[in-house]
Length: 77
Image (tube, rainbow, N blue to C red):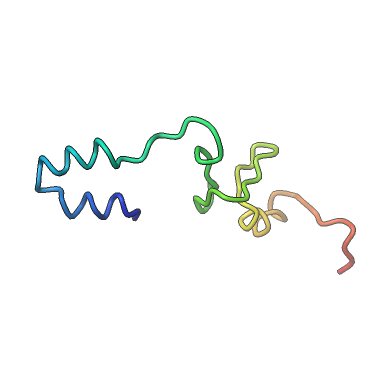
């Protein structure tokens, strides 16, 4: 739960405060840029791999890459 939701939960019974809070503190809907995309697996916004429509962060990609058919080359095991 984000800070925004925590505070809203605390003041929900005060109508005037809620209206003012929503007007000035509600997070904007991101239409483009890095803030608009999330990892489909964990929700992280950093280090997103979008190639081939994966939309996975690098950590999740490393976990599921073999299942998706990706192989490591150039590294002897």
